[in-house]
Image 1: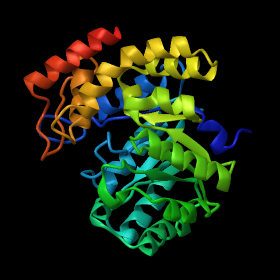
Image 2: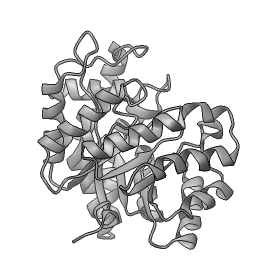
Image 3: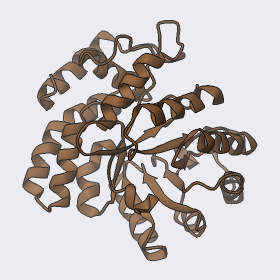
Image 4: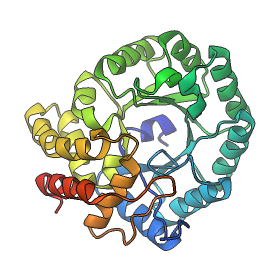
Length: 309
């Protein structure tokens, strides 16, 4: 049997959570979304309850339901990783245990948002320890964007986190090439078995060139075939073909993740899915308003350039 680490290789889609106009989870649309993305050729698994899945505004009961639906509506061999995101270490531990019980194969530990303002390294270690000690599932670290203040783990702290054998992988979301390569080289030196997933949607090609075992990315819930084609070309060392896929993806990545104002990725992902006819309502939980007309125009243009429309 393949290990959890083996199964992480390749492309895994970070999914969204469809809402009704009054901001309740639309379970029928969520089930259809999960099934559609998981069945796309080359998608090896799903990351649910990630940032794209609005994990900071869902209740524990809702997050648990997302995992249950993912388990029910995806192929049996689909790897289901659930994010764990809470400001409290005690609540994070309870959440992690509940999501494992609901059927998650592994758990991705997000840093609390308050850490962006600063934290002691021992606080980070303690937070991860609480989650570790209440679960048995494989655990993953999240390397936050360098633009997220103190939330990104500096090398000495990353060294301490990687030393814990319960943690077997990292979703490397530094979103900056130099930081990505620095972290990759450090982790490979410390633990060659540790899985590094290059997960900065805007620089997937660069991550694959530097080195990566795959990705957990929300771009793959919109244009899974194109993301898979980029990965397959990189795996084959066909960098010319990879560059072609990257050129198609790049405007869409910019329109979703980079264009101002920041923090709008989930809303724009939903806007894309609505434009593609895969979502009837693109509402996100407040305080995020739905995609504006100008955002939708930019997304539509990028989707056409990518060949999705």
